[in-house]
Amino acid sequence: MLEARIENTATSPSIKRKKQRQRRGLSIQITNAMLGVLLPVVLITIWEIAGVMGALNPILLPAPSMILQEFINLSASGELASHLGISAWRALLGFLLGGGLGLAAGIWVGFSIKTERLLDPSLQMLRTLPHLALAPLFILWFGFGETSKILLIAKGSFFPMYVNTFLGIRSVDGKLFDVARVLHFTKWQLISKLIVPASLPNIFLGVRLSIGVAWLGLVVAEMMGSTSGVGFMINDARSFSLTTVVFVGIIVFAVVGKLTDSLVKLLEKRLLRWQDSFKGGGF
Amino acid sequence: MTSEVLVIDDLNKVFSAPTGNVVALEHIQLKVQQGEFITIIGPSGCGKSTLLKIVAGIDTEYEGSVTLHGKPIEGPSIEKGFIFQEPRLFPWLTVEKNIAANLSLKNPEVRKKVDELIELVRLQGFEQSYPRELSGGMAQRVAIARALLRNPDVLLLDEPFGALDAFTRSHLQEVLLDIWQKNRTTMLFVTHDLDEAVFLGQRVIIMNPRPGHIRNILPIGLPFPRKRASHSFQELRHIVLKEFEKVEEPLLDQGAGI
Image 1 (cartoon, chains in turn yellow, cyan):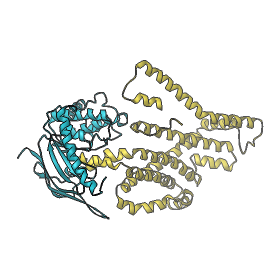
Image 2 (cartoon, rainbow over the protein chains, first blue to last red):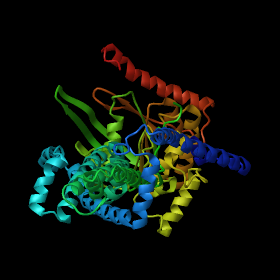
Image 3 (spheres, each protein chain N blue to C red):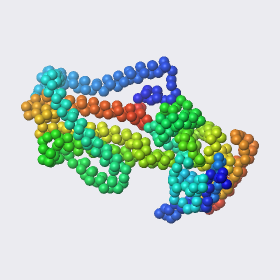
Protein backbone atom coordinates (compact mmCIF):
# COMPACT_ATOMS: atom_id res chain seq x y z
CA MET A 1 0.00 0.00 0.00
CA LEU A 2 2.69 2.39 1.07
CA GLU A 3 4.78 1.50 -1.95
CA ALA A 4 1.91 2.24 -4.29
CA ARG A 5 1.32 5.60 -2.66
CA ILE A 6 4.89 6.67 -2.99
CA GLU A 7 4.78 5.88 -6.68
CA ASN A 8 1.62 7.89 -7.08
CA THR A 9 3.23 11.11 -5.98
CA ALA A 10 3.93 13.55 -8.71
CA THR A 11 7.73 13.45 -8.58
CA SER A 12 8.65 10.37 -10.56
CA PRO A 13 11.71 8.45 -9.38
CA SER A 14 14.27 7.02 -11.78
CA ILE A 15 13.24 3.95 -13.73
CA LYS A 16 15.73 1.67 -12.06
CA ARG A 17 14.51 2.49 -8.61
CA LYS A 18 10.97 2.15 -9.78
CA LYS A 19 11.67 -1.39 -10.99
CA GLN A 20 13.27 -2.28 -7.70
CA ARG A 21 10.24 -0.95 -5.93
CA GLN A 22 7.91 -2.95 -8.15
CA ARG A 23 9.84 -6.11 -7.38
CA ARG A 24 9.75 -5.32 -3.70
CA GLY A 25 6.05 -4.47 -3.96
CA LEU A 26 5.39 -7.85 -5.58
CA SER A 27 7.25 -9.78 -2.90
CA ILE A 28 5.30 -7.88 -0.25
CA GLN A 29 2.07 -8.85 -1.99
CA ILE A 30 3.10 -12.50 -2.00
CA THR A 31 4.03 -12.35 1.68
CA ASN A 32 0.68 -10.74 2.51
CA ALA A 33 -1.19 -13.45 0.60
CA MET A 34 0.84 -16.18 2.35
CA LEU A 35 0.01 -14.64 5.69
CA GLY A 36 -3.70 -14.82 4.84
CA VAL A 37 -3.68 -18.55 4.00
CA LEU A 38 -1.41 -19.58 6.87
CA LEU A 39 -4.13 -20.05 9.48
CA PRO A 40 -6.58 -22.05 7.27
CA VAL A 41 -3.78 -24.31 6.02
CA VAL A 42 -2.63 -25.15 9.55
CA LEU A 43 -6.20 -25.81 10.73
CA ILE A 44 -7.05 -28.02 7.74
CA THR A 45 -3.85 -30.03 8.20
CA ILE A 46 -4.65 -30.71 11.88
CA TRP A 47 -8.23 -31.58 10.94
CA GLU A 48 -7.09 -34.03 8.22
CA ILE A 49 -4.59 -35.74 10.51
CA ALA A 50 -7.27 -36.11 13.22
CA GLY A 51 -9.68 -37.55 10.64
CA VAL A 52 -7.20 -40.07 9.26
CA MET A 53 -6.33 -41.20 12.79
CA GLY A 54 -10.02 -41.89 13.39
CA ALA A 55 -10.40 -39.30 16.13
CA LEU A 56 -13.44 -37.73 14.42
CA ASN A 57 -16.90 -39.13 13.75
CA PRO A 58 -17.19 -38.99 9.92
CA ILE A 59 -20.95 -38.31 10.14
CA LEU A 60 -20.42 -35.21 12.24
CA LEU A 61 -17.06 -34.02 10.96
CA PRO A 62 -15.76 -35.72 7.82
CA ALA A 63 -12.07 -35.26 6.99
CA PRO A 64 -11.12 -32.59 4.43
CA SER A 65 -10.04 -35.25 1.93
CA MET A 66 -13.56 -36.78 2.03
CA ILE A 67 -15.12 -33.37 1.49
CA LEU A 68 -12.78 -32.78 -1.44
CA GLN A 69 -13.77 -36.14 -2.92
CA GLU A 70 -17.44 -35.21 -2.57
CA PHE A 71 -16.74 -31.87 -4.24
CA ILE A 72 -15.10 -33.65 -7.19
CA ASN A 73 -18.03 -36.06 -7.49
CA LEU A 74 -20.64 -33.31 -7.36
CA SER A 75 -18.71 -31.22 -9.88
CA ALA A 76 -18.24 -34.14 -12.26
CA SER A 77 -21.96 -34.99 -12.23
CA GLY A 78 -22.81 -31.35 -12.97
CA GLU A 79 -25.11 -31.29 -9.95
CA LEU A 80 -23.13 -28.64 -8.15
CA ALA A 81 -22.88 -26.34 -11.17
CA SER A 82 -26.62 -26.46 -11.82
CA HIS A 83 -27.47 -25.77 -8.16
CA LEU A 84 -24.93 -22.96 -7.98
CA GLY A 85 -26.16 -21.47 -11.25
CA ILE A 86 -29.74 -21.33 -9.98
CA SER A 87 -28.64 -19.87 -6.64
CA ALA A 88 -26.45 -17.24 -8.25
CA TRP A 89 -29.25 -16.23 -10.58
CA ARG A 90 -31.68 -15.81 -7.67
CA ALA A 91 -29.15 -13.86 -5.63
CA LEU A 92 -28.37 -11.60 -8.58
CA LEU A 93 -32.02 -10.87 -9.36
CA GLY A 94 -32.83 -10.27 -5.71
CA PHE A 95 -29.82 -8.05 -5.25
CA LEU A 96 -30.55 -6.01 -8.36
CA LEU A 97 -34.15 -5.52 -7.35
CA GLY A 98 -33.51 -4.79 -3.65
CA GLY A 99 -30.25 -2.93 -4.12
CA GLY A 100 -31.64 -0.84 -6.97
CA LEU A 101 -34.69 0.14 -4.95
CA GLY A 102 -32.48 0.78 -1.92
CA LEU A 103 -30.26 3.09 -3.95
CA ALA A 104 -33.24 4.99 -5.30
CA ALA A 105 -34.88 5.27 -1.88
CA GLY A 106 -31.58 6.33 -0.29
CA ILE A 107 -31.10 9.09 -2.83
CA TRP A 108 -34.69 10.24 -2.54
CA VAL A 109 -34.77 10.26 1.26
CA GLY A 110 -31.24 11.67 1.42
CA PHE A 111 -32.22 14.64 -0.68
CA SER A 112 -35.22 15.81 1.22
CA ILE A 113 -35.80 16.17 4.91
CA LYS A 114 -39.55 15.93 4.25
CA THR A 115 -39.23 12.54 2.58
CA GLU A 116 -36.98 11.46 5.42
CA ARG A 117 -39.65 12.33 7.97
CA LEU A 118 -42.28 10.57 5.89
CA LEU A 119 -40.48 7.35 4.97
CA ASP A 120 -37.54 6.73 7.24
CA PRO A 121 -39.41 5.67 10.42
CA SER A 122 -41.43 3.05 8.55
CA LEU A 123 -38.40 1.77 6.64
CA GLN A 124 -36.36 1.48 9.83
CA MET A 125 -39.17 -0.55 11.37
CA LEU A 126 -39.29 -2.92 8.40
CA ARG A 127 -35.51 -3.25 8.51
CA THR A 128 -35.58 -5.02 11.85
CA LEU A 129 -37.92 -7.80 10.63
CA PRO A 130 -35.99 -11.09 10.36
CA HIS A 131 -36.07 -13.18 7.19
CA LEU A 132 -37.33 -16.25 9.00
CA ALA A 133 -40.33 -14.37 10.33
CA LEU A 134 -41.28 -13.09 6.92
CA ALA A 135 -40.55 -16.20 4.85
CA PRO A 136 -43.84 -18.02 5.69
CA LEU A 137 -45.80 -14.89 4.80
CA PHE A 138 -43.98 -14.50 1.49
CA ILE A 139 -44.67 -18.15 0.63
CA LEU A 140 -48.30 -17.66 1.55
CA TRP A 141 -48.58 -14.61 -0.67
CA PHE A 142 -46.41 -15.54 -3.61
CA GLY A 143 -46.31 -19.33 -3.46
CA PHE A 144 -43.32 -21.63 -3.55
CA GLY A 145 -42.11 -20.32 -6.91
CA GLU A 146 -39.26 -18.01 -7.72
CA THR A 147 -41.17 -14.81 -6.85
CA SER A 148 -41.23 -15.37 -3.11
CA LYS A 149 -37.54 -16.29 -3.06
CA ILE A 150 -36.39 -13.33 -5.08
CA LEU A 151 -38.55 -10.96 -3.07
CA LEU A 152 -37.13 -12.29 0.18
CA ILE A 153 -33.59 -11.73 -1.10
CA ALA A 154 -34.56 -8.29 -2.37
CA LYS A 155 -36.02 -7.40 1.03
CA GLY A 156 -32.70 -8.24 2.63
CA SER A 157 -30.48 -6.38 0.18
CA PHE A 158 -32.68 -3.30 0.13
CA PHE A 159 -31.73 -2.04 3.58
CA PRO A 160 -27.91 -1.96 3.59
CA MET A 161 -28.09 -0.14 0.28
CA TYR A 162 -30.72 2.29 1.51
CA VAL A 163 -29.03 3.11 4.80
CA ASN A 164 -25.57 3.62 3.29
CA THR A 165 -26.71 5.66 0.31
CA PHE A 166 -28.68 7.90 2.64
CA LEU A 167 -25.67 8.27 4.93
CA GLY A 168 -23.38 9.00 1.97
CA ILE A 169 -25.59 11.79 0.69
CA ARG A 170 -25.96 13.34 4.10
CA SER A 171 -22.21 13.36 4.69
CA VAL A 172 -21.30 15.37 1.59
CA ASP A 173 -19.09 18.27 2.66
CA GLY A 174 -21.24 21.39 2.97
CA LYS A 175 -18.28 23.52 1.92
CA LEU A 176 -18.28 21.86 -1.49
CA PHE A 177 -21.94 22.78 -1.86
CA ASP A 178 -20.88 26.43 -1.54
CA VAL A 179 -18.32 25.87 -4.29
CA ALA A 180 -20.99 24.32 -6.48
CA ARG A 181 -23.20 27.37 -5.90
CA VAL A 182 -20.42 29.81 -6.72
CA LEU A 183 -19.56 27.87 -9.89
CA HIS A 184 -23.23 27.85 -10.85
CA PHE A 185 -23.83 24.11 -11.03
CA THR A 186 -27.22 23.13 -12.42
CA LYS A 187 -29.37 20.83 -10.31
CA TRP A 188 -28.36 17.86 -12.45
CA GLN A 189 -24.66 18.78 -12.16
CA LEU A 190 -25.09 19.04 -8.42
CA ILE A 191 -26.26 15.42 -8.35
CA SER A 192 -23.91 13.95 -10.95
CA LYS A 193 -20.77 15.98 -10.22
CA LEU A 194 -20.98 16.45 -6.47
CA ILE A 195 -23.43 14.29 -4.58
CA VAL A 196 -22.98 10.97 -6.36
CA PRO A 197 -19.16 11.00 -6.44
CA ALA A 198 -18.99 12.23 -2.86
CA SER A 199 -21.27 9.48 -1.60
CA LEU A 200 -19.69 6.77 -3.75
CA PRO A 201 -17.59 5.32 -0.88
CA ASN A 202 -20.76 4.77 1.14
CA ILE A 203 -22.66 3.43 -1.85
CA PHE A 204 -19.92 0.86 -2.41
CA LEU A 205 -20.11 -0.19 1.20
CA GLY A 206 -23.86 -0.58 0.67
CA VAL A 207 -23.26 -2.79 -2.37
CA ARG A 208 -20.90 -5.05 -0.48
CA LEU A 209 -23.19 -5.43 2.51
CA SER A 210 -26.19 -5.91 0.23
CA ILE A 211 -24.51 -8.75 -1.66
CA GLY A 212 -23.65 -10.37 1.66
CA VAL A 213 -27.23 -10.14 2.83
CA ALA A 214 -28.46 -11.42 -0.53
CA TRP A 215 -26.52 -14.68 0.00
CA LEU A 216 -27.90 -14.89 3.52
CA GLY A 217 -31.46 -14.45 2.30
CA LEU A 218 -30.85 -16.97 -0.45
CA VAL A 219 -30.10 -19.78 1.99
CA VAL A 220 -33.22 -19.02 4.00
CA ALA A 221 -35.31 -18.88 0.83
CA GLU A 222 -33.91 -22.12 -0.55
CA MET A 223 -34.21 -24.02 2.68
CA MET A 224 -37.89 -23.10 3.01
CA GLY A 225 -39.32 -25.31 0.31
CA SER A 226 -37.33 -25.46 -2.84
CA THR A 227 -36.17 -28.16 -5.22
CA SER A 228 -33.02 -26.53 -6.50
CA GLY A 229 -30.14 -24.33 -5.46
CA VAL A 230 -27.20 -24.73 -3.11
CA GLY A 231 -29.45 -24.05 -0.10
CA PHE A 232 -31.72 -26.91 -1.17
CA MET A 233 -28.68 -29.12 -1.73
CA ILE A 234 -27.51 -28.53 1.83
CA ASN A 235 -30.95 -29.07 3.33
CA ASP A 236 -31.55 -32.20 1.28
CA ALA A 237 -28.16 -33.68 2.25
CA ARG A 238 -28.83 -32.95 5.92
CA SER A 239 -31.96 -35.10 5.92
CA PHE A 240 -29.89 -37.99 4.51
CA SER A 241 -26.97 -37.29 6.87
CA LEU A 242 -24.66 -36.64 3.91
CA THR A 243 -22.41 -34.37 5.92
CA THR A 244 -19.79 -34.11 3.17
CA VAL A 245 -22.38 -32.55 0.83
CA VAL A 246 -23.38 -30.10 3.56
CA PHE A 247 -19.76 -29.10 3.88
CA VAL A 248 -19.33 -28.70 0.13
CA GLY A 249 -22.41 -26.46 0.06
CA ILE A 250 -21.14 -24.32 2.92
CA ILE A 251 -17.69 -23.97 1.37
CA VAL A 252 -19.18 -23.07 -2.00
CA PHE A 253 -21.22 -20.34 -0.32
CA ALA A 254 -18.15 -19.01 1.45
CA VAL A 255 -15.95 -19.03 -1.65
CA VAL A 256 -18.52 -17.48 -3.97
CA GLY A 257 -19.38 -14.88 -1.34
CA LYS A 258 -15.75 -13.95 -0.90
CA LEU A 259 -15.17 -13.82 -4.67
CA THR A 260 -18.06 -11.46 -5.31
CA ASP A 261 -16.93 -9.28 -2.43
CA SER A 262 -13.39 -9.16 -3.84
CA LEU A 263 -14.79 -8.22 -7.23
CA VAL A 264 -16.71 -5.29 -5.79
CA LYS A 265 -13.66 -4.29 -3.75
CA LEU A 266 -11.54 -4.28 -6.89
CA LEU A 267 -14.06 -2.04 -8.62
CA GLU A 268 -14.16 0.16 -5.55
CA LYS A 269 -10.38 0.51 -5.53
CA ARG A 270 -10.37 1.61 -9.14
CA LEU A 271 -13.17 4.12 -8.79
CA LEU A 272 -12.07 5.53 -5.45
CA ARG A 273 -8.40 6.05 -6.29
CA TRP A 274 -8.77 9.67 -5.21
CA GLN A 275 -9.46 8.81 -1.59
CA ASP A 276 -6.94 9.98 0.94
CA SER A 277 -7.78 7.99 4.01
CA PHE A 278 -5.95 5.85 6.53
CA LYS A 279 -5.01 2.56 4.91
CA GLY A 280 -3.93 0.68 8.00
CA GLY A 281 -0.18 1.07 7.69
CA GLY A 282 2.05 1.54 10.72
CA PHE A 283 0.31 -0.74 13.20
CA MET B 1 -18.87 56.40 -14.61
CA THR B 2 -18.73 53.39 -16.91
CA SER B 3 -15.48 52.20 -15.37
CA GLU B 4 -17.19 51.50 -12.04
CA VAL B 5 -17.73 47.78 -11.97
CA LEU B 6 -18.99 47.35 -8.42
CA VAL B 7 -20.99 49.89 -6.43
CA ILE B 8 -22.00 49.30 -2.83
CA ASP B 9 -24.37 51.92 -1.47
CA ASP B 10 -25.50 52.11 2.15
CA LEU B 11 -25.19 48.38 2.76
CA ASN B 12 -26.46 47.12 6.11
CA LYS B 13 -26.53 43.57 7.35
CA VAL B 14 -28.02 42.28 10.57
CA PHE B 15 -27.69 38.72 11.86
CA SER B 16 -30.60 37.76 14.03
CA ALA B 17 -29.61 35.52 16.87
CA PRO B 18 -31.67 34.18 19.78
CA THR B 19 -29.64 36.38 22.12
CA GLY B 20 -30.43 39.49 20.11
CA ASN B 21 -29.59 41.02 16.77
CA VAL B 22 -25.97 41.56 15.78
CA VAL B 23 -25.18 44.33 13.34
CA ALA B 24 -22.58 42.77 11.07
CA LEU B 25 -22.28 45.59 8.56
CA GLU B 26 -23.33 49.20 8.91
CA HIS B 27 -23.54 51.81 6.20
CA ILE B 28 -20.95 50.39 3.82
CA GLN B 29 -20.14 52.69 0.90
CA LEU B 30 -17.71 51.55 -1.76
CA LYS B 31 -17.11 52.10 -5.45
CA VAL B 32 -14.69 49.77 -7.19
CA GLN B 33 -13.19 50.72 -10.55
CA GLN B 34 -12.74 48.28 -13.40
CA GLY B 35 -9.44 46.44 -13.01
CA GLU B 36 -8.78 47.76 -9.53
CA PHE B 37 -7.03 45.71 -6.83
CA ILE B 38 -8.70 46.34 -3.47
CA THR B 39 -7.58 44.75 -0.23
CA ILE B 40 -9.84 44.71 2.81
CA ILE B 41 -8.24 44.37 6.22
CA GLY B 42 -9.66 44.29 9.71
CA PRO B 43 -9.77 42.25 12.91
CA SER B 44 -11.95 39.15 13.10
CA GLY B 45 -15.61 39.96 13.48
CA CYS B 46 -15.42 43.19 11.48
CA GLY B 47 -17.67 41.74 8.79
CA LYS B 48 -15.12 41.62 5.99
CA SER B 49 -16.00 38.07 5.04
CA THR B 50 -19.69 38.86 5.28
CA LEU B 51 -19.19 41.77 2.89
CA LEU B 52 -17.43 39.50 0.43
CA LYS B 53 -20.17 36.86 0.66
CA ILE B 54 -22.80 39.49 -0.08
CA VAL B 55 -20.90 40.64 -3.16
CA ALA B 56 -20.52 37.00 -4.20
CA GLY B 57 -24.26 36.50 -3.92
CA ILE B 58 -23.86 33.67 -1.42
CA ASP B 59 -25.57 35.81 1.21
CA THR B 60 -28.56 37.64 -0.22
CA GLU B 61 -30.23 38.92 2.93
CA TYR B 62 -29.14 42.51 3.34
CA GLU B 63 -30.39 46.08 3.17
CA GLY B 64 -29.07 48.67 0.77
CA SER B 65 -27.85 48.28 -2.75
CA VAL B 66 -25.01 46.25 -4.21
CA THR B 67 -24.69 46.43 -7.97
CA LEU B 68 -22.34 44.82 -10.45
CA HIS B 69 -22.32 46.63 -13.81
CA GLY B 70 -25.37 48.52 -12.59
CA LYS B 71 -27.38 45.35 -11.95
CA PRO B 72 -28.29 44.37 -8.37
CA ILE B 73 -26.69 41.15 -7.12
CA GLU B 74 -29.33 38.52 -6.58
CA GLY B 75 -27.33 35.33 -6.26
CA PRO B 76 -24.10 33.60 -7.22
CA SER B 77 -23.09 33.93 -10.85
CA ILE B 78 -20.02 33.17 -12.90
CA GLU B 79 -19.30 36.91 -13.23
CA LYS B 80 -18.09 36.77 -9.64
CA GLY B 81 -15.27 34.37 -8.99
CA PHE B 82 -14.87 33.33 -5.37
CA ILE B 83 -11.82 31.89 -3.69
CA PHE B 84 -12.25 30.47 -0.23
CA GLN B 85 -9.69 30.29 2.52
CA GLU B 86 -9.29 26.58 1.84
CA PRO B 87 -8.90 25.36 -1.75
CA ARG B 88 -12.12 23.32 -1.56
CA LEU B 89 -11.23 21.11 -4.51
CA PHE B 90 -13.27 18.07 -5.48
CA PRO B 91 -11.10 15.23 -4.15
CA TRP B 92 -12.30 12.77 -6.80
CA LEU B 93 -11.22 14.94 -9.73
CA THR B 94 -7.75 15.47 -11.16
CA VAL B 95 -6.26 18.97 -11.27
CA GLU B 96 -7.45 19.71 -14.80
CA LYS B 97 -10.90 18.30 -14.13
CA ASN B 98 -11.13 20.33 -10.94
CA ILE B 99 -10.41 23.48 -12.91
CA ALA B 100 -13.03 22.55 -15.49
CA ALA B 101 -15.47 21.33 -12.78
CA ASN B 102 -18.90 21.56 -14.41
CA LEU B 103 -17.48 22.48 -17.82
CA SER B 104 -16.41 19.73 -20.21
CA LEU B 105 -12.76 19.32 -21.14
CA LYS B 106 -13.98 17.78 -24.39
CA ASN B 107 -14.96 21.26 -25.47
CA PRO B 108 -11.82 22.46 -27.32
CA GLU B 109 -12.31 26.01 -26.06
CA VAL B 110 -12.41 24.89 -22.43
CA ARG B 111 -9.49 22.54 -23.03
CA LYS B 112 -7.38 25.36 -24.44
CA LYS B 113 -8.21 27.76 -21.62
CA VAL B 114 -7.56 25.15 -18.94
CA ASP B 115 -4.14 24.47 -20.44
CA GLU B 116 -3.39 28.19 -20.50
CA LEU B 117 -4.49 28.59 -16.90
CA ILE B 118 -2.41 25.64 -15.75
CA GLU B 119 0.56 27.43 -17.25
CA LEU B 120 -0.50 30.74 -15.69
CA VAL B 121 -0.68 29.28 -12.18
CA ARG B 122 2.50 27.26 -12.85
CA LEU B 123 1.10 23.77 -12.45
CA GLN B 124 2.41 22.10 -15.62
CA GLY B 125 3.07 18.42 -15.06
CA PHE B 126 0.38 18.12 -12.39
CA GLU B 127 -2.66 18.07 -14.69
CA GLN B 128 -3.44 14.44 -13.83
CA SER B 129 -2.67 14.65 -10.11
CA TYR B 130 -5.36 14.28 -7.48
CA PRO B 131 -5.81 16.95 -4.77
CA ARG B 132 -4.37 14.65 -2.09
CA GLU B 133 -1.07 14.70 -3.97
CA LEU B 134 -0.81 18.48 -3.93
CA SER B 135 0.68 20.83 -1.36
CA GLY B 136 -1.51 23.53 0.17
CA GLY B 137 -0.10 26.22 -2.10
CA MET B 138 -0.56 24.11 -5.22
CA ALA B 139 -4.14 23.30 -4.28
CA GLN B 140 -4.91 26.98 -3.79
CA ARG B 141 -3.46 27.72 -7.23
CA VAL B 142 -5.85 25.14 -8.69
CA ALA B 143 -8.70 26.97 -6.95
CA ILE B 144 -7.53 30.26 -8.47
CA ALA B 145 -7.38 28.71 -11.94
CA ARG B 146 -10.86 27.26 -11.42
CA ALA B 147 -12.23 30.72 -10.65
CA LEU B 148 -10.38 32.35 -13.55
CA LEU B 149 -11.65 29.85 -16.12
CA ARG B 150 -15.10 31.43 -15.84
CA ASN B 151 -13.66 34.82 -16.86
CA PRO B 152 -15.06 36.64 -13.84
CA ASP B 153 -15.53 40.41 -13.93
CA VAL B 154 -14.51 40.51 -10.33
CA LEU B 155 -12.51 38.00 -8.31
CA LEU B 156 -13.41 37.79 -4.62
CA LEU B 157 -10.77 36.30 -2.37
CA ASP B 158 -11.54 35.47 1.25
CA GLU B 159 -8.19 35.22 3.08
CA PRO B 160 -6.98 32.85 0.37
CA PHE B 161 -3.41 32.56 1.59
CA GLY B 162 -4.18 32.72 5.32
CA ALA B 163 -3.46 29.04 5.97
CA LEU B 164 -0.18 28.92 4.04
CA ASP B 165 3.38 29.30 5.26
CA ALA B 166 5.20 32.59 4.68
CA PHE B 167 7.22 31.44 1.66
CA THR B 168 4.30 29.89 -0.17
CA ARG B 169 2.22 32.93 0.66
CA SER B 170 4.62 35.47 -0.82
CA HIS B 171 5.05 33.24 -3.87
CA LEU B 172 1.30 33.08 -4.41
CA GLN B 173 0.98 36.83 -3.92
CA GLU B 174 3.35 37.23 -6.83
CA VAL B 175 1.42 34.69 -8.90
CA LEU B 176 -1.76 36.62 -8.18
CA LEU B 177 -0.23 39.97 -9.14
CA ASP B 178 1.05 38.35 -12.31
CA ILE B 179 -2.46 37.16 -13.15
CA TRP B 180 -3.93 40.54 -12.32
CA GLN B 181 -1.47 42.37 -14.55
CA LYS B 182 -2.13 39.96 -17.43
CA ASN B 183 -5.92 39.71 -17.14
CA ARG B 184 -6.82 43.01 -15.43
CA THR B 185 -9.47 41.24 -13.38
CA THR B 186 -10.95 43.41 -10.64
CA MET B 187 -9.83 41.98 -7.31
CA LEU B 188 -11.48 42.22 -3.90
CA PHE B 189 -9.06 40.62 -1.50
CA VAL B 190 -9.88 40.09 2.19
CA THR B 191 -6.94 39.52 4.51
CA HIS B 192 -5.86 39.89 8.09
CA ASP B 193 -2.21 40.26 7.07
CA LEU B 194 -1.07 43.88 6.99
CA ASP B 195 1.92 43.23 4.74
CA GLU B 196 -0.26 41.37 2.28
CA ALA B 197 -2.78 44.23 2.18
CA VAL B 198 -0.13 46.83 1.42
CA PHE B 199 1.80 44.60 -0.97
CA LEU B 200 -1.20 43.79 -3.17
CA GLY B 201 -3.74 46.59 -2.89
CA GLN B 202 -4.08 49.79 -4.85
CA ARG B 203 -6.46 50.78 -2.10
CA VAL B 204 -6.52 49.31 1.38
CA ILE B 205 -9.89 49.33 3.10
CA ILE B 206 -9.62 49.24 6.87
CA MET B 207 -12.66 47.85 8.63
CA ASN B 208 -13.72 48.17 12.22
CA PRO B 209 -15.93 45.73 14.16
CA ARG B 210 -19.00 46.12 16.36
CA PRO B 211 -20.75 47.13 14.22
CA GLY B 212 -18.73 46.29 11.12
CA HIS B 213 -18.04 49.40 9.10
CA ILE B 214 -15.35 50.98 6.92
CA ARG B 215 -13.01 52.97 9.07
CA ASN B 216 -10.76 54.34 6.38
CA ILE B 217 -9.74 53.82 2.77
CA LEU B 218 -6.05 54.35 2.07
CA PRO B 219 -4.70 54.63 -1.47
CA ILE B 220 -1.36 52.86 -1.94
CA GLY B 221 0.38 54.74 -4.72
CA LEU B 222 3.42 52.47 -5.02
CA PRO B 223 4.17 51.09 -8.48
CA PHE B 224 4.27 47.33 -9.09
CA PRO B 225 6.29 45.24 -8.51
CA ARG B 226 6.61 46.42 -4.96
CA LYS B 227 9.63 45.81 -2.80
CA ARG B 228 8.78 44.93 0.77
CA ALA B 229 12.15 46.15 2.03
CA SER B 230 11.91 49.53 0.30
CA HIS B 231 11.64 52.66 2.38
CA SER B 232 8.37 53.83 0.80
CA PHE B 233 6.75 50.40 1.37
CA GLN B 234 7.69 50.42 5.02
CA GLU B 235 6.44 53.98 5.37
CA LEU B 236 3.04 53.11 3.92
CA ARG B 237 2.90 49.96 5.99
CA HIS B 238 3.50 52.12 9.02
CA ILE B 239 0.65 54.45 8.08
CA VAL B 240 -1.75 51.51 7.69
CA LEU B 241 -0.52 50.06 10.95
CA LYS B 242 -1.23 53.36 12.69
CA GLU B 243 -4.74 53.45 11.24
CA PHE B 244 -5.16 49.89 12.40
CA GLU B 245 -4.09 50.79 15.90
CA LYS B 246 -6.62 53.60 15.98
CA VAL B 247 -9.20 50.94 15.24
CA GLU B 248 -7.98 48.70 18.02
CA GLU B 249 -7.58 51.24 20.80
CA PRO B 250 -11.15 52.39 21.40
CA LEU B 251 -12.14 48.76 21.34
CA LEU B 252 -9.76 47.88 24.09
CA ASP B 253 -11.01 50.86 26.06
CA GLN B 254 -14.49 49.45 25.89
CA GLY B 255 -13.18 46.14 27.07
CA ALA B 256 -14.46 44.52 23.91
CA GLY B 257 -11.18 43.00 22.81
CA ILE B 258 -11.09 39.91 20.68
